[in-house]
Image 1: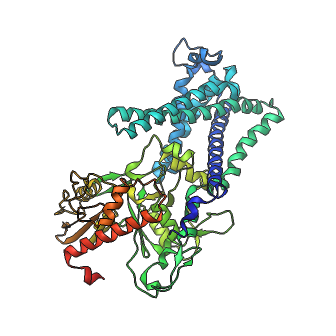
Image 2: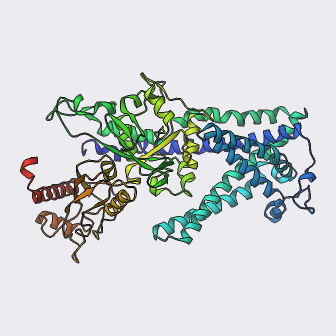
Image 3: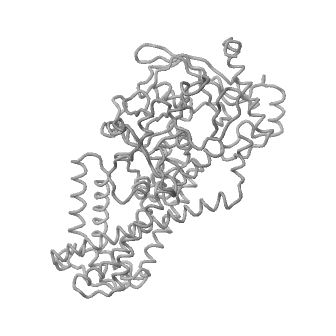
Length: 587
């Protein structure tokens, strides 16, 4: 790892430049689709008024409403009051239409789509008629005060939310900050869409009357074509793909024997990781991730996320029918590079990259709905889309794949946008978003409990100076709440730190009781130092106070620090096994 880990210090042209380039493309593509949606709203409203002419005065919300506005910067912004209710109704209709497009089920999809189209049909013409009567809003420059106000509100709300999270302030104040951030972001997108719609509505209305100029029509069609050009680029611009490449090129090796040297692997199928595909035996590899998708369980109701496990034979949610045969899932093909070649939807590097997707728009129990659009907009998208394993139709589709082929999915805007927009607004539908396993369980313990294992070994490397074992407590309590175990005999206070900062112990043993009456042995080893630790480790800690709880972002490990953690792991494991008298047996 030290030999190949120099990818962290590659020249800027190999690291920063690609990420910045992908960020710029992501922003351009997002602006293009928002403008396109606004243009379509203006187009639809113009067609609706052409088919059903009406006077604006027929739809006034109160008698004193004037149909003519004079808007001159910030001073006359109150004159827009009459149009705001109609704008809200139009945007609500667009939201319903979007939900219907990505909904699962013919009935739900039809209802949402009809509701959205009806709302745009009735409320679109008066909205854009009102806006077109404001001379300043017929051009993009006239919308700058509105857009700047929305952007400023979003930045302020974001800063306040970040400070509250840093200070660990929760409750109503945190909820209000999240609410403000969410609606400020929506207001910015709404302003951009209405800006585009109000700018193109007069062009379209004049076109229908035969009065538009060639330049106006050229601008209109340029707006329509831009998303088509950017969609293929957007499909390949996710940072997750760059992350996969880094993992594969730096750490992907194949060994043909227990003592053989590693050979670089350009790609490795997950189904070939099992022991039956190797000339020597090794433990079965389970890669724990989190599936961000709404689903219902019989014991704990509805949930927005679930544990997801990749293995050489099955990929899915342990203990449920929501799973795929790995070899079948690998038959699915996606285009992940700039070449015309299609790669397997699931591979070893993809699974490792997904379970390391610590930052993404959806992050299981760590999801911040107010920050989701921002993460997607700036291309912080390390997750990966797979077919929704909770849907029987998707499981049947994957089961029927006997050879390499693309997954069937309902194309809406294009594959690039059909990834970006659901990530931005947290819509799953026929697919599910797979991210870091720590977004559900940072120990990987839940997957083993759900599988009903008879003996479980868990290593808790959480930076826990007080020894409170909060993550272990949470996972065990969650297993009881969801009905996967009836109880346990683990002493969760055994790790409590002494006044000196040392742990009382770094391992504990206990039992789990499953609902069927069977029991399991649970052995937990925890990152920490005791007073019985080797002198070398205690000396290193005296010289480096952060040891052994260095923050996760500090990834710059030198040889001494790496050796210190390796020695600590060896000492902790040996002490744990020695307490069971199993050292000699396992060696």
